[in-house]
Every structure is written in structure tokens, then in C-alpha cells.
Length: 463
Image 1 (tube, rainbow, N blue to C red):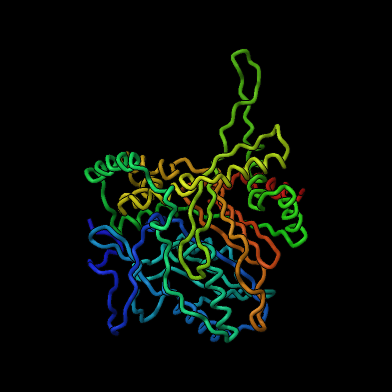
Image 2: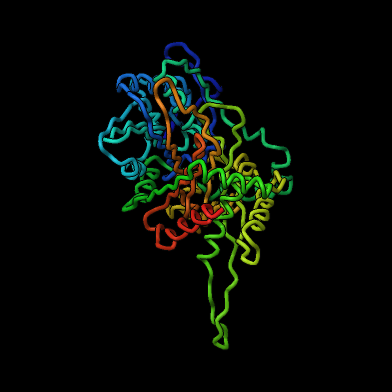
């Protein structure tokens, strides 16, 4: 069967464009899980103070797109099943369009746009909006995960702002994280590779690839009669200072404090009561929360690209201990020095054929069933039963507060609602202000979920 985004087959790393210039062709392996994912859409919103001329903004966005090589690429899958970013000459680059809208709410735009599939084979990876309202003006980025991680949005905005301020913008060739650079301890052992070889033999007999039509069917099904709900809570400098001071006094990270508040709220809302054979009520044993932490391997690279990875942990808030004791306990769980466990997903991805990775998204969304895919999903820490929560912390957004006469403020990052987690939490700190975003499908945003968010915030404000 034909692949979506199918290109002609090449046998060299570099291709030559029609103008004689040398183009980029980078294999997609770490990012392969995003390729068919119908909901891997990242959102960034920021408010802007100062006078903006629309034509100047259009020039700045066009220049920022031109300087980021990944935004001048399309995605192709070749006959051997490998997927690539491949640079293209666009008559009209779909990524440098500025959509100017008046008197609209940014969350409404997200609700409308996240259900519209990105045209990956024609290079569409990012949608940029300039929102002009009576009391404020805003920039909104809605981008596919193949355009890069949450930090990538900040780097792109920096390029746009530098253009608006007549500052130079440097070229950023696509530099992907290479799975071969993972610590040696994270790689599969000989016995694990032998076991995987048996699994892959079964895949070669029973597996399949997926067509472009099947991808769009998957996308349509995932979003049919669906909308998402977004809320965010702002912790201003004094509140953030108290959280940071608490973390310092407990000798843990702010991230550990945040996760403990979420775990405490989840624990309180999952208290279960059962009736024994004699009719007596007693508390049932609870399973630990499944927490998917999204962490970064980025280092010093300041270009667009996917440098995130998921580190799954389990933790059940211990209500026989106080909050501080739970923070330390959870912190030690997070910072366990175990490269094998920490990079488990990435170590396995490097050994899998692309079509098998693609099948995960179809099985997660109920459009495909294969025991080999199920085995791989379990080894990747994924299942049809979503995790309790997934948390992405961008730590500090690396943007200036001012670019000439323009000032940025109220930076909000919203991670994607995935098929593998119910409660999606994004954390950003910009200019001493922290925003916590909450993202969920409407049908998942039950009164219980609302209470979870409210309790989590309340515990953090009590510190």
C-alpha cells in the first residue's frame, strides 16, 4: 500500500534543488511517533504591548520562517518506509502566512484550528496569528509537533521579535537529536534485542503500512464531535517566589513541588470505599498515579526541532506523610540516576521500523489491532488506557521582555491532548511569572477534573 507523504526514493543523504543549491534531507526517527498522531498540536499564546505595523510583522514572520530550515521542509516517506524532512522550494511557503483577526478569543481559534489536519506533505507545520482586540494584541502559534517542541515556539517568536526590532536573525539549519547520542546504558541489552528480533519477525509477517487516506480518516475520527477545553492559572512574582523558596528549603526542584501538588489532588479525588463481606465500609487500595513527564534533551541548541522525551513514573501521594515529605519522596523518584529507565522509550524507538511506530497511533485511536503493536505500546509505556496526567515544564522561556519599543508578557504554552493521557499540564515561566495551563478533551473535563485543577492550584497557593 502507498504511504502518505510518499516521495521518490533517494540513496544519498543530500538532494540538489532546482536552483543548484544543496538541500537538507534528515531522517525522522525520534519524531516518528508524531507523524500520524491526530492530536499532536502545540499552542503558544503571548500578549504584545506597543505599536505593530502589519506589513512589518508579515516581513518579520516571513524572514523568521526563512531562517529556520525545518519550516522550509516537507515530510516524505520513501519506498523503504523511512521518513524524512526534506527541504523544498516553495512558491508560497504555508508557514509564513500571518492571519490577522479582530475581536476574537484565542482559545476559540485553538478550538477551531486544532481539529484541522496539517498538510505535511506540502510543508505546512505552523500557523501564526496576530489577534487585535480592543484592550490588547496577541500572537498565537498553533503548530504540529513535527515543527518542534514547546521551546521551539519561543525561539521562533524571538526571531519574529528581532525582525520587528530591525535586529539580525541568524540562520538555523535543522539539527535533530540523534538517538545514537543517547548514553550507552540506555541502549537495549543483547537479550532485549534478541527478544525484539522475535517480535519484529512477527511484524514482518503480519504488519502493514498506512495510506494517506487512512491518516485523514484517523484524524477525522479523532476529532469528530470533539473540542478541547483550555484553562490557565497565573502565579505572579510573589506567588512564584514562595514556591521557589519552598523548593529551595526542601532541597528539591520547583518541578517536584508542582508534581506533588498534582499528585495530592489526584489522590484525594480517587479515594475509594468498598464494602466487605460483613457489610463494613473500608478504603480500597489505590493504584499509583501514572505520570508522564515531558523533559528536554535540548542543551544549547536554539533552533526549532523536537528535543523532548517522555519519562513515565508512578507515584501515589502518601496521606500518612505531610506535603514536604511527599515532595522529597517524589523528587527522589524523579531524579533516580537510571539512564536505562529514563531513556527507555528513545532506546526502543531507535530499533523499530517506521511502519510499526506508525501503527501505534492507529491502535491507540481504535483503528487498528495487532498483537505486535500492543506489545510495543506496552514497552513504550503507552496503552489504550490513558495515563492520569502528562506534564510539560518549559522552565524559563528564553525570550527578552523588550524588543525595541515592543514588550512581551503573559506567555502561555499549551501542550497537546494526546490519546495517552487525560490531564495535560503545561508550565511556563517568563519574566518572573509562571503560567500553568490545563488542556483536556471536553468529554474528559468532568466535574472531577475541574476539582482536580482547582485543588492543585489551591495547594500551590498555600505554600
